[in-house]
Length: 181
Image (cartoon, rainbow, N blue to C red; front, side, top):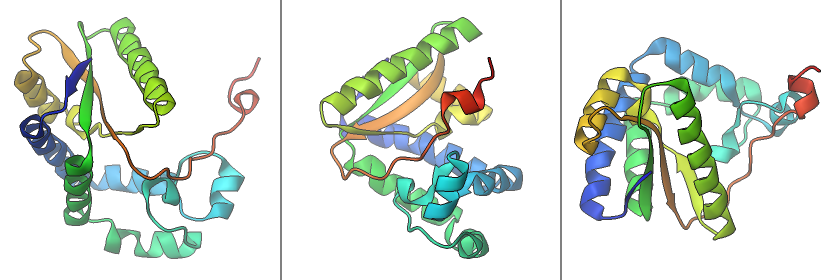
């Protein structure tokens, strides 16, 4: 894990976040898939117990039909980039989880490390949120890896952390509904 708490470092990482977010927002298929996973209302969140409940990201709960109708009007590249600028500038730091090799076992270890970090942050009363856009767009990931000086390493997960308001959690289905024995 690489930890960044200096303002200059966070601003530099913000540029990669905005590049990745802009690329994703320009990808119609990405936006359509994201929209399909948003649960706009309490009823949708309760009935599906998956996806991302709109209130979990600081947005209002709306009737599903209304949320889907206005989604493209309010979920724009400029609006999302402004939101990320504000969030990043109010965060205490950024953690980047890195794999030594570009292989599944190393990716899984990076995931375990991020899980341990998130659990410890929660125990300490810190909020945290993934900001993975710098690693989700291949061209940006390569530039980000170069910025980080990773050589053969691979940045896998990016998380911001700090103090902030607690938001509602997205619901999840019980394990037995997902994994069949």
